[in-house]
Length: 414
Image (tube, rainbow, N blue to C red):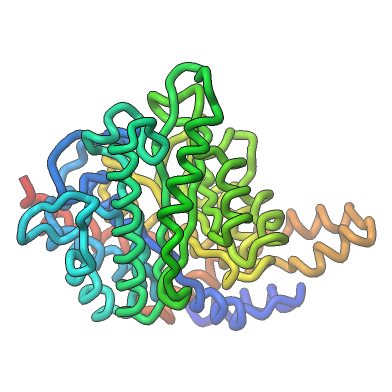
């Protein structure tokens, strides 16, 4: 290993890249791993079907059925992922061991077990109110619902989760990102596009009116172009949330599966950061239209990672968001997390300043040549070194551990 890395180190040095520095920088970046990959977005509130444009396909055996199993699976996944990270929770993953409570009545103590879990492992926690898979979301509207009683329920739910998020952040000593996404929209072209968005704006104003210490809680809002059953109109569009975030001092969260396939989130990141201190991401892999496939080591991911590195990783809160029930769920976590890190490493190993100088001086030939050649540089040797330092398996060897876990643990879940 050392010979391969030392050779790679020399090769990168020729273009001005310090591989040791790149590894150190990567070790400082935490990615928020979404808990809902482990049980197909089921949560612990009920065994009902997913609604609100959420759909997990496949029936691979061994999904987590309770908090203990989900925590064990998260532990197994994190043991195969280099670095220290965060876990991302939905409200419906609360601890209901003393009985299920209404979402608008959730309290901080319902997440004490998660806090204890995270504290023991040195992890941060992020959280999301769950505005789907509920009788009061059955008609596709929540915070924009014309019925004040329905709207009140969801406003109170979001308020409760913000309070919980601030509690989590204070207990763990790291800010908890509270991200609001709603499924609201219409299947057919609406007669009135304005009123639902006005109701959403007023609801958000009330939800965010309570101020929490930013050391413990930060808020974001997440847009979507369309969803299942709301193909013609989405209340929480990108334009709505981008403007709302800018005016109200909250973060705009960009999910790269929530835009038209020809739009690039990599292109949006630098524009957003000209006007905001930070931006949040949900990284996924959309296929043709809005879908949540396991994050692959794709050109799109590499471009997103490049913009993160150029902007400064401290300015971008990175979370993953996908749910694939057709393959081993732990393997899905590990692949997505490692691919996100690998893409960041590739960006750190790219001579971005030199390429920018070529662009600014009009030397597009050299920019193109160097940009293409660096793609075949020995990033694998540097990645292996990073994994070695973090004492996790190299290359595909982690999969043998997942297969053993499936044989001994997951296969017992009926």
